[in-house]
Image 1 (cartoon, rainbow, N blue to C red):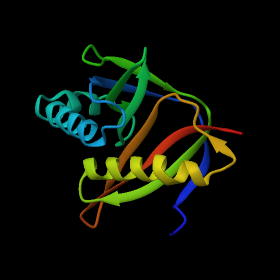
Image 2: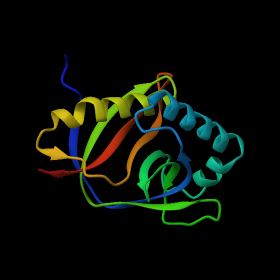
Image 3: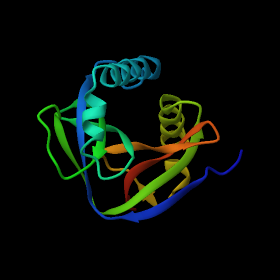
Image 4: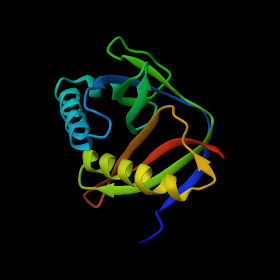
Length: 161
């Protein structure tokens, strides 16, 4: 098996403004979770909420954030910004520190997010033996398109063991 293509990167703290939904599926039910996420993204694209977020963003990145809040599994569509919006449901603070970063590309943003999440949690964290994920928000970042594919990264905050 190939070694996963990941790096450990130092990042400054940053803020993502998110519109969220609570995922109801059990955390081991990947098919259920992925369907809930897909339905949510379709809704925020269709009703204009994603466009509203994009208008206050400081770059073109679209964040797909997972965060446990009060024992609820939350999923957010977000952008990097310092601004606030009435439509947004959460200001998500990502800490300064080390992040496990996995890069990839796929035909759609949804496929990219699912693939990166699978690789990051399924392989990369296990291979990065000196580092551990101890919770906090993690995100896939849709960065753009090239050659007909969506490309981006997954960012998971980690601490040295």
